[in-house]
Amino acid sequence: MLAKDFYSIISSDESTTNFLISKNLVANNENAECIKCGSAMNLYLRKERGKERRVLRCKRKGCQTTQTLRKDNAFWTYIDKNGRLNSGLSLSQQLELVFYWTQGLSNKTIMSLTGRSSNTVCDWMNLCRDIPLKMFEKRNKFGGPDVIIQVDECLLRGSRKNHKGRYRLADLPSENIEDENDDPLENGKKNYGRRMDGPWVFGLCDDSEARYFVVEKRDKQTLHDIIKREVVLGSIIHSDGWPAYNGIAQYGFTHNTVNHSENFVDPLTQAHTQRIESLWRPLRLKVVKNMCGTSPDLLPRYLMETWWRGINKSDLFNAFLRDMAEVFV
View 1 (cartoon, one colour):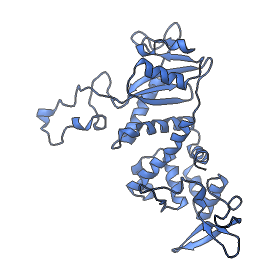
View 2 (cartoon, helix red, strand yellow):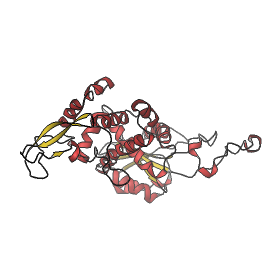
View 3 (cartoon, one colour):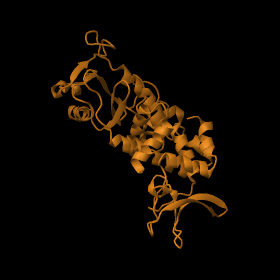
View 4 (cartoon, one colour):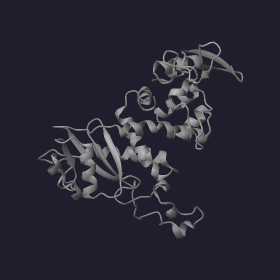
């Protein structure tokens, strides 16, 4: 969806409400019942603190209880860290944050475009990631007979090649980051040659989907368990020669390998892992950049977001609203 089309949707409270009603993302007078008397309700324009907003009002004379349109969708009734319903933003303002999140913009850019505070933007971006998380939990196995699944592992935050070059500060454990006041002559070589510890990410992909999992170990049991859980039996597994992949065929998969010290593509089986390997660099650039300054515990959420974006490339905004209806309504 183009930005000009989106802003025509949120040009007024009425147009925003009608749009969300059409997507079944807020309550409407056709399915709403009064919480007090059970009577039908009507959409009503309410003036409050100099502003107008649409609410549901009971039709019954003498009752006329009002309810928010957000009552059936927990996404709009944001719960703050104190456990209270606290949504100081209008539906139009909330939808604007959702739209910018689906466009993959940074928090800083969204703050600049919307005028929202850092805390507000951060909270809403994390809330948006709840949708990919919930959809990932509902995923089915992928692959199938004659379908190739490529697998590989990556030290996600170790972005150097051939063990050469500088680490970025985001890649270093905090205890290893040099103080900016250190003598450059004395400490000039401290940023070279150090060994990185995790996190390791295990990836699986076919031609249309890629899934990523944080793993503590790259051992046989860990990788085999993930493959058995995620991949349909009968699929063709392509991997490199990492020993942990040995024995995959015993579960009902066809397993072909490529020896990267000799070939990029195996000359006999045509096995290769070029697609999954091509995904690591953009994943590093995107995820490490977005996670800068956040807890490593949030990494799985960012990986699920990457998966979700990968399977909804054509129209992320409408895909988000579709999945929101499935998760929250």
